[in-house]
Image (cartoon, rainbow, N blue to C red; front, top):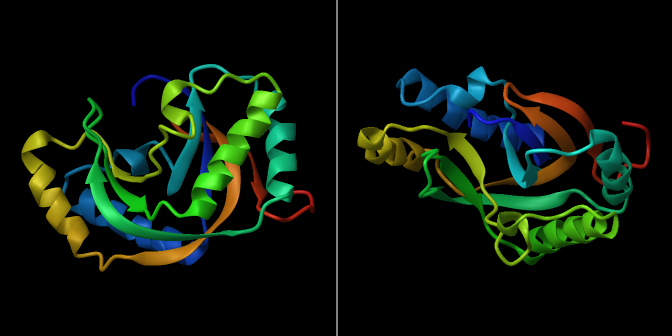
Length: 184
């Protein structure tokens, strides 16, 4: 991900986050990919991404949206790769109705404020995933998948907060706890 931009990200409870970090670390130790660590990312599922946005405009939308939500049960249950130039390896969450509804409600809230949702983040097209490596050399894809298979999936937990970041390197603008109306 050399190009910059903004992303709305869904973050996990500490135990689930640690399971993902375990994957990042084992891939880094094997020198397959350590990019996510280097750009100071945090384990997440991307809900929306765009090259340009006014963060302050999104802040009130996301704050209101988060306050109406509850922590969201998640189960990272599959291993996959995206067939694009970034060679991203990921853990995929089970696409539960609650996850899909969460995403489509966020899109609705943004559309109401006149924010354009690009094709790949529209509810019918969105692929939820939690990246564990990017720019994986093609020759090491097979090995990487085997390493991830040792993670003993599924790993379950909750999505706990939602935030906006700029990348890369990753810089967080704000994040809000789901269901918590207290100031974050």
